[in-house]
Image (cartoon, rainbow, N blue to C red; front, side):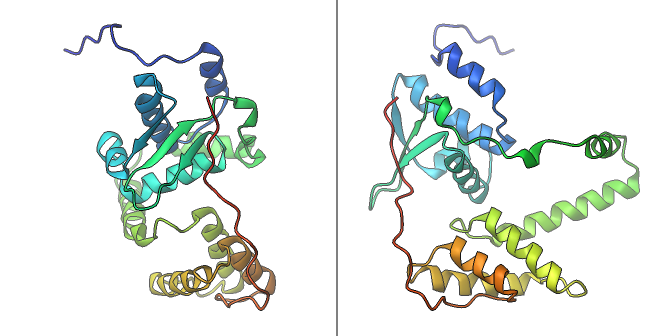
Length: 227
């Protein structure tokens, strides 16, 4: 039987812990965040070099999902990353100035109608419902072909756009792969995913085309802030 003692522990201020309690972090992002906290504060360090393989081994989350969770934490401005060329492990840190964290989107606030639906979904499932859920799970597993560099929030917006303009013909997995390949070719020339996808949606296109304007100067995405 496990019986941990307080001889070794992760030191964190109550103020920061209170901020985390108020701030909603999705499941896999929370697992990744806690691992970063364990590797830094747990060893009385401000930052630490962590490889993706360490995240996978400690959290049990697939590599692609770990990368997605890290991007989510970056977008929330909760963590910092220093990327070193030719190094397999990036250096991670936690932004303890919680006033700098990105405010949560209002979209996560559930209406009474949605809350009711969630409660109904939590009722005991019939054998038929269980089979349907298993089918959904299999579809999600098949979607693991998404590359690590792809911004899934932007990609979901593109999929909604495709569904809107082709209501009777959903985009196939093969078509997704082709579009991802075309998108990669364009961003390799210096364009951002955001400007390419947003332009495709604004113009009502089914796929991606290289913008006529030269690419904007990229802004650094890796920053570091002292604890």
